[in-house]
Length: 110
Image 1 (tube, rainbow, N blue to C red):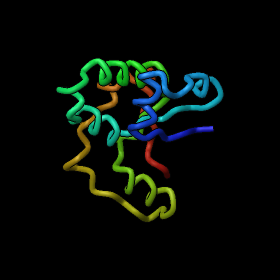
Image 2 (cartoon, rainbow, N blue to C red):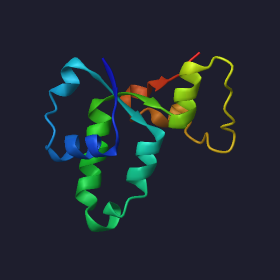
Image 3 (tube, rainbow, N blue to C red):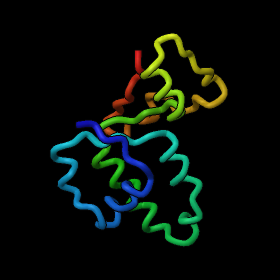
Image 4 (tube, rainbow, N blue to C red):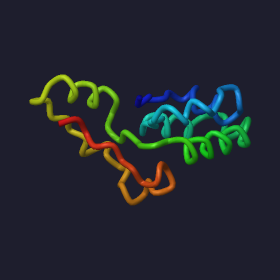
């Protein structure tokens, strides 16, 4: 089963509050929004070690990344005619995700 994990799940995997064996039976997916939340969190100042552990957990356990806006991703799942305008927000390039999930970027829903 694919599980799209929110920020707190990744923090929990990084700090050991969530059992990492969940990754053995499920595909854990990270989103661009989660990466942005962690990268702009005040934890960068108050608890940099937690942020490092979180990014290491993402690197180790994420099997893919959803680079689309979460709302667009959901709308595309339900409406084949929906076409988002991501020209101003699509800044993650596939070659820049090689440290996450071996570079697996999940495509938008057809």
